[in-house]
Image 1 (cartoon, helix red, strand yellow):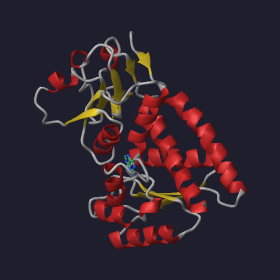
Image 2 (cartoon, rainbow, N blue to C red):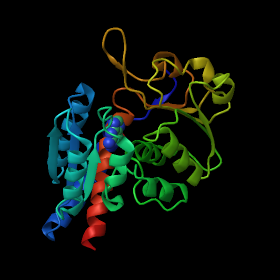
Image 3 (cartoon, rainbow, N blue to C red):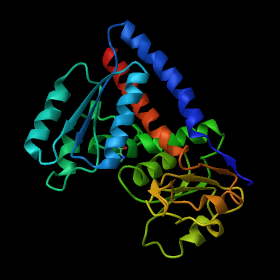
Length: 283
Ligand code: GUN
């Protein structure tokens, strides 16, 4: 192995220590930070994510509300619940876990969240603010990746970064954060022709496709930084990412493992966004 590992668990712990101190300071002033997590239905992966988010709140001194709602909940009932959370002064962040059941319009639900409580950063006004370089909330996973670059001294200004994936949750906001940081950014997707020719010119490769082993060793420039946002299961049921880690680690300069890389950072940055929101509300 030549690549150095980017340790998302250690970096998360470090950031959470500071978050817990800020939460305690706010609580002392009578403004405990509060997060509401809304889960509709019983998607097993979503249940795990939601449980971890609530536990992170409890571990770091946040007030939290977890709404577990039935899969056949009407869109109108969900909108009503969000309206109540928008008006609840104890709540500084609202997260509706995605995906939602198909009968519910996810765009409509996201737009119903008060932008100043949209700690996912998915609301159109927050996406627009990010695009114009004045973000209120940075989407948690890309924000966590930027923190990794900062912590490990990965230069972004002037770097060529290739983002594989164009989701609203990761790919697009990741590209925008990198653009704002002065990187030259290429966004690839599953239809990109000869992706390797593009990634081989990259100083930074970020894979966020949900396709196991998509990124191979011969697609990476020696010494490049490789970030794996993928969360897949291999044939033995073991968690793995989008990167062929065993081979890519011998070419890359820095690499995130799965698990233990980007995953823990997502929840940590959700806490950061919620504390920032609570601090804004208290000021
Ligand atoms: N589903 C997968 N990732 C996310 C996320 O970051 N936020 C929400 N709300 N749902 C998700």
